[in-house]
Length: 146
Image 1 (cartoon, helix red, strand yellow):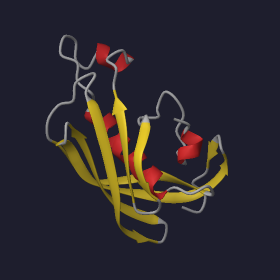
Image 2: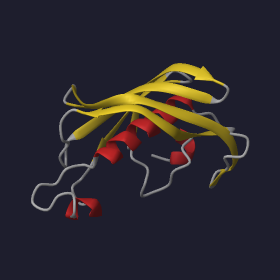
Image 3: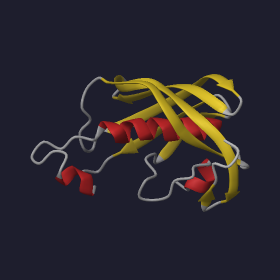
Image 4: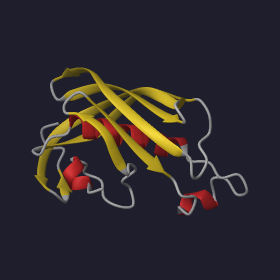
């Protein structure tokens, strides 16, 4: 999936969504990711008991929120995690479904409820704040004016 088309400032290997399943522009999105188990971080997290790091689940949820709220002229960046709860570990080869829904906005800041599920069961959920800034070109991000 092309991150530029999705409106994300990220590039490989840090694009943490593979497919957008649902997109309500400016409101909500659902996206998926399967961690193969071959990613280098599994070597140390944890040897013999590989788990997807919670911070990557949080980032996948934030990227999904960015897809939901993105537009061609602006980039959305994670500004804050208001709350985040990790309910159960995620293992390699499990299909993670990320969802995000805008619940509020004020002066270029957007509040989103986010969730990650495996087999329709929540594995993580929380609330994030995204900040909108101008997109200078497809490969560069500016926080000027944020």
